View 1 (cartoon, rainbow, N blue to C red):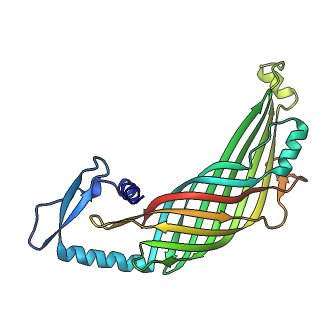
View 2 (view 1 turned 120 degrees about the horizontal axis):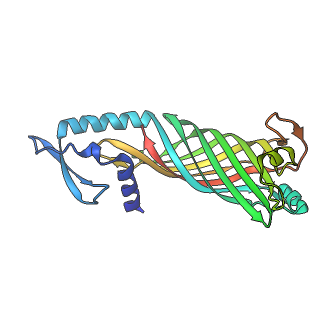
View 3 (view 1 turned 180 degrees about the vertical axis):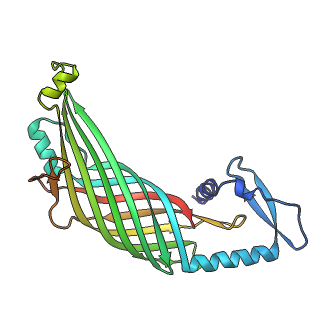
Length: 268
């Protein structure tokens, strides 16, 4: 695991920044560095006084303030039982309550207080004979957290509380092989696809564990971690038949009931 974190940090920080290796100077400090491209370990020589000053400044700033941006990959659990009941009655393929998700986000921290936002996206498409169900979900988590660090400030655990804005678009398509393929017949004939929009708001209860690998050669940090969120819905959601928000009734859903995401990115 340690070697994986070091390798990932090397890829994020990049090799060009450390191509500054010079011949040893008086009072120089030698630092080992593993190339993220070749994997070879090389020795960098930096002035010891400059290094100590830069390291102290970097650590002092990080202990009081930091920002980060990251990408995420993971799993999203939803609640689509009511929707699946309607799809089953209509003969359309049902959707899964668990999906592979992707996204990203960012946060800023002042001392221990963290303010952040993350996006979680997933989509699926299922086809059964001439009927197709397509689902696309985009969710935004806005949160406030309080970070607990280890003594060296290399790891943190952050409970978070916030709001989840969830959305799902369901497209039902009937592929009729007997229909004409001309543009005129498609425009004047009956609709062959129907789109339903769903929006809801939830409480975002989260827990973030993060590690901050530090590259002494370039005085940079990256972030690797695990973010967990549980989002019970607040109130009832809303269905819209069109983009003009014509409200209609429907079963209660929760597009993002729970999510677990691996995150990796930069610290600045």
